[in-house]
Length: 321
Image (cartoon, rainbow, N blue to C red; front, side):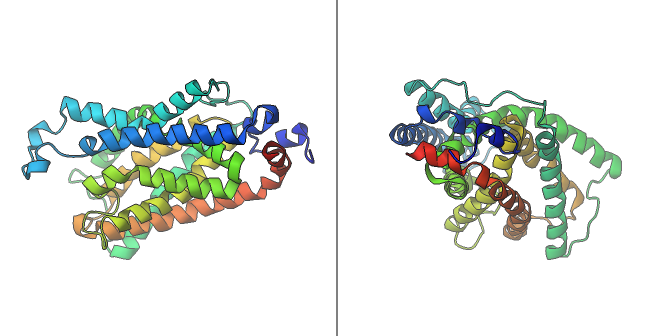
């Protein structure tokens, strides 16, 4: 093997998956991915349609009083945790266990990864706000009626909600970053794993994209195909950032933190600080700005991983034999 394990340890992107070549089987890995996708998409496509629909919407009447029904919440949690359930099922069926699930935090020697887990999402959120402001010409204003104190209170509230988001996003990251991406990288290499994994992750959002027009609105040109395609682009580039964090921290906890920040604090920054012109009629433009800011954040992370890729090529080629 061209590179020794000592040399592999010297990079920020070390990956324990490559340290067990004797346990690798291409056929087994493909089978594991197949079972994972079957469970993950089976649950999402079964429960996701009810999880992201407003009660009464199927008959044209929306009841705002009963939006959070027990059935809807049950369907939502099953859909949200479907990647984790797919991971658990595949590992159980193939007796892989969870010795490499990298679920637990590893702070010693991985401070940079956890620091970037906070810095990169917040940078993305601010960049997104600036792009939206410039594109829509709305001006960067404080939108809250109660002024800056209400804005600060909202930020603290969303930060608290972030704890719940952290719990929910274990359901996604345990499946994507702690399972699928690593398996794909073993089979097809780094770049292909980012692209294929991102597309799979994007298509997984199909129910919410169709039911709610997630990020791009139901009035997007070519809805819902446009929404699905753009979501795949978003997931490819943001997936590169999250996978870099996973590798740098040698733990899925770092991407969970980053993902939770994107879904909570970054959203409230956009809704609280932008002017009243941010309405549904321009949601597609807002989604376009989100794609641009995601590319500006995700591509450098992708390049950085490629910069360190040569330190892992020897081990991957050994696994493929």
